[in-house]
Length: 313
Image (cartoon, rainbow, N blue to C red; front, side, top):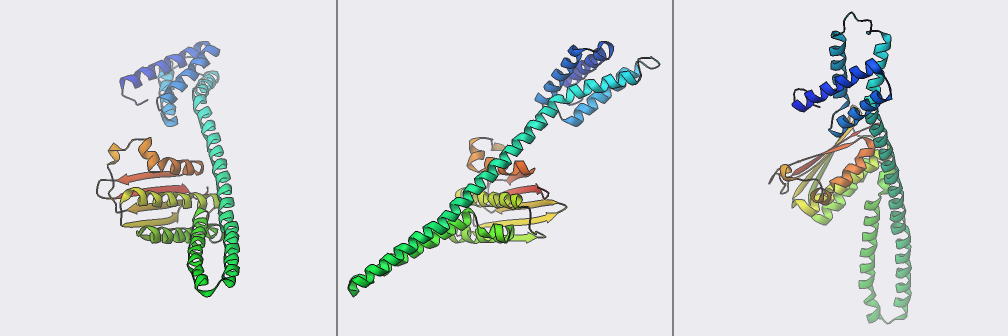
């Protein structure tokens, strides 16, 4: 409720009247009214601080008009506190629900990462073993054939070597062992080199004061950078990308900026376009860790993602 608006003034008057009524009569009906007022505030986007200010203003008005009255005592103050607590209960319920949702998201992301790790290991290990077996079989057949026919097998072997390299690259980018063994910085360096080689982008990665971070935080930041680079290659028509990673005051800051076509953020609408740019997935990954992502863009001037995450995550 913004103070000064008609709607805000009307609500403030309704709150004061409900509080006065409860201070005089008490009862469950008064507390139910407090709860309904709290739900209304929450639904209309009011914050906790605005609710505190609203309650404080109502208390001041009520008590100033009742100076010298015996009603201003510890019991009255206690009842006012009970009324306010009931008003704030919808906020508490919502806060707990958000916390539970964040915990569920975190658990889901951890489960997905474990599955990705399993798939990456299968690609790297099992597919590699199958290709090695194919190589052995080709060697055996090659020895049994005459020389002109056998020479043609080298082309097949070269193709298999190429497949093997692609599988290894995919498995490393899917879940790089560097991320677990050496941390976020080497993993992003490896990712950037791979994307640059495939796409022709000039990718520059700078990092400052970044040491090993909590495993969950490193994984999320790696996935966010991976998604951001994927967006650039698909949509930006860019030539160069700058990735910057820094850590200070227990906050990790990561930016991914390209020199592509950009767009007008004012025309940007949540939904299909946001999903197409992968922002929904990025936000869902960051939310359980208390992280945020901000999009900066303009037509012809590229796009920049600014990601901040508490290091304590």
